[in-house]
Amino acid sequence: MLNPNNPTVMFMRVFIAARIQRARRLEGGASALEWVLISALLIGVALAVGKIILDKLTKKADSLDLG
Image (cartoon, rainbow, N blue to C red; front, side, top):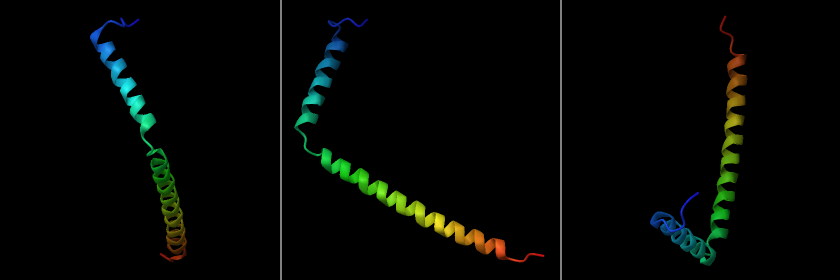
């Protein structure tokens, strides 16, 4: 068990409390959520386009007569 009078423990308690207070005051959470949603959408589109291109290349490669 950690000693609550230890200077390191006291520092961490104050540091974490300050971070929590600052996070409660910030109103940038919605903006971060928007960036996550936009990024997820763009990644999904990129994956879909990549799959379409891969399927077309595979189909074309399979249709080549090498013999």
